[in-house]
Image (cartoon, rainbow over all chains, first blue to last red; front, top):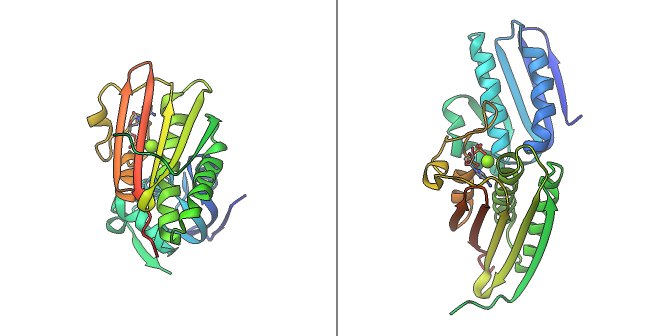
Length: 103
Length: 144
Ligand SMILES: Nc1ncnc2c1ncn2[C@@H]1O[C@H](COP(=O)(O)OP(=O)(O)O)[C@@H](O)[C@H]1O
Ligand SMILES: [Mg+2]
């Protein structure tokens, strides 16, 4: 599974890896939502350090999880974005929804 | 006068989502002979991924159909990528190309065309309802 998740109930950290496209995003979404939906998490951290490729399906993945965490009045943080990933995120204006830490 | 391609490849894949990765990697491998930068290659891969995904998700929503990909290389580093399907078609192309417009539901961002547009130099979309859609993209790979 190209995703590893750590959770203490409040903070859920999702370490994504590999390529994020329409094909791979489904499993990632299900894995993250298993920790978010019906829970009390108020901070979701999505880590893109090991993501080698992403298209707009990744934007859908981030925006969908943003809606989930907002439902709990929580926040989304994004970290480890390469220049390519950041460029894709910029098209969606994700930097306005989430704190994005590059690198 | 029609331009003469210096080199060309044609790839046909079935509209299975596992081919999204194959299609973009195959196009990138062919374009690699122009010695693109990492950024240019990622731009091409992303644009191809968007167009191919659209065939899989939207053109053939309940069936498996063919996706025809033609990559042509021209003088001065020009790459042209044509991605064609024989699927459902789009009745209002202009509206479909607007950012955030999607018929795909919650998990689709409606930004596929916006990505293709900003990651290439030229994007043209032709579509006929019930006949299919052709997306043509061009990008100049700068000589280093
Ligand atoms: N090849 C295609 N065949 C039929 N409809 C398409 C095709 N490509 C795009 N569309 C239509 O255009 C809309 C916008 O596409 P896009 O910008 O890629 O966003 P998304 O894929 O996230 O919906 C789609 O929701 C769909 O209605
Ligand atoms: Mg799309």
